Length: 78
Image 1 (cartoon, helix red, strand yellow):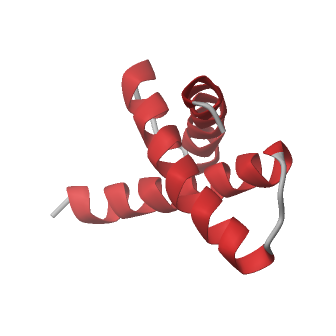
Image 2: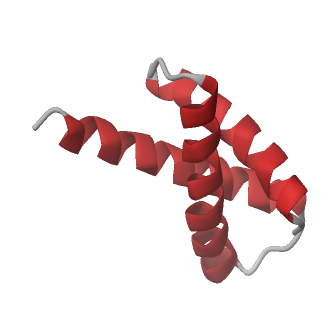
Image 3: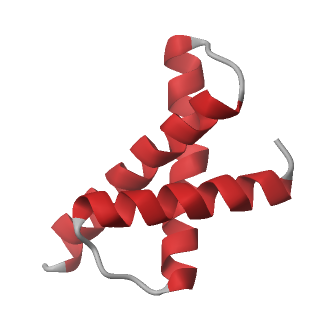
């Protein structure tokens, strides 16, 4: 996947994940969460399910972003 594709999918996944988790974040933070989540979730999902294509990447990105937000909310308050 190209860098531009990663940014677009990551931004969309970050937006969706922040809305699902009820987190208010600015645009750069949302994109950062989505891109990190896309990397993490995409790798995990592809390794576990051996799926290919943009849809599996998007699902993995959302799952990864949800994990990052959960970790952020859990450990930021301490």
